[in-house]
Length: 333
Image (cartoon, rainbow, N blue to C red; front, top):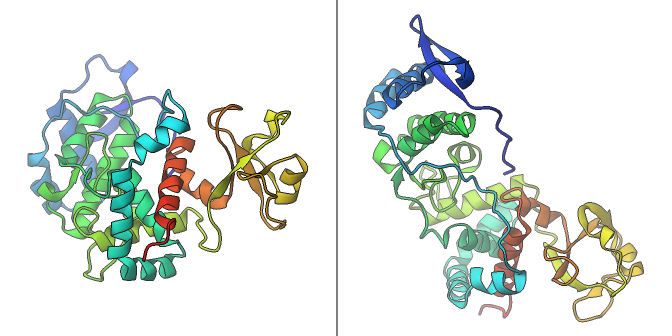
């Protein structure tokens, strides 16, 4: 999901028994963490969180010193795809992905049909996002979110996620101790933020819960649903690596520029093996060069754009697509 731009930080002050917002610049003294948490408690009740939930949860929230905002948007590494892809998708990850694909083939096929997503992309996304669930977070999420909001640099974002996390506890009867996440505020095998959980988490096995921490089917279903909502279509793929002529005009390389296969062919673009591009004109396609003129070139389709809604990084999206291709070829028997 594309992250919202967060404005100047705000903190809560208690005035005359009510909660009011005041800018940090207008305050002579910032509240301590206990005071800040008390203000969050008042606002939680104003937002409709039941008193029983508030009274049960808030005494367990403690300051968490490592809480620092990073968000999901990945900073492009100081490397190239030639070294990044094999490092990000080593052979053990390929083997694990193919093993999971085979082991859960029946469930994945059913989910693929339901959500209109090819199963290999569900597995590939899980592998890149959380190493197939190994990196699912083990920290008390509400403490992390409250501490990150209190820190102030991205207060509005973390305050919203904090209240979303309270709603998860209330709506799904998840105990405080079981609502775990990472120090960046994402949680479970899917690395959803709390607000994304409320939007995309699915009950994949019909047990009435959406457990993205421990339930493989719920995790698969939630990732498939995210891709579906991002615009993924199973009747197409993500794109292809291509070649361009030496004199190619680099200004054509941009996600903002879309052309048909015929138009790209007219500019000298070919398949990676040098053969002609498909002879069809029913798709609008973009050319990207993440490493510039000397690096790999790709024609990418709408499904690729769906992956960018998870993380606006070509390196991220191409690592997912690379793993998906390694799952597909050679065919799993």
